[in-house]
Length: 268
Image 1 (cartoon, rainbow, N blue to C red):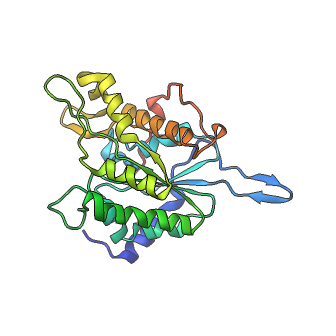
Image 2: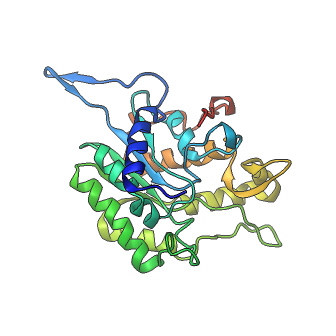
């Protein structure tokens, strides 16, 4: 089913109040008689980060778990959508929706690459060193124009091992192209591709199955179950701190166990 840009905008704006937030109500600090608005972390990305609903359980996007690692009051507005690339997210009007919502002091975390490589699909395909970077610049420029801080995140790795158990990269030149762009534009980079690849190698062939959406009927090496989403969200939060996007007071539980039971799947 194809949607007009107007329909996408209307639906997405209606969903904004339902954005997942850290536990507890959003707080505001009062200083010199002024109310300081709490920032929001906006996510633009694909299915690996997206909100999942009851019909997809136990599939879990890492964006669903990110609030568990952030202080109460620091909100996450998750606009990641299954199957989108840096190009199709823009063409469908979804970036317009995000940029219409962001305010000065907010953050826009951008993770694309999984679907940009779909060369047979002109609606999604981008070439790593040209059109992919061109599209990512639209996120960067759009956020900056509104006083928000753009953050680039390389695509989280799939579960793939060679015959001797070495974890394999699967995203071609897209991570390198994003790294180069981040350096050129002076944008903070969360290198989730490299970090997740190292984590899958540490866990090994069999243990990683417990982090991906492996069920009795499906062996999915791309999407996560709750433990996988929590593990990747921990990487993201840790990198937000390490790259000084967030301050130490903004993050929590980076070394603590987060129960799988905290993950919930609302009705669509």
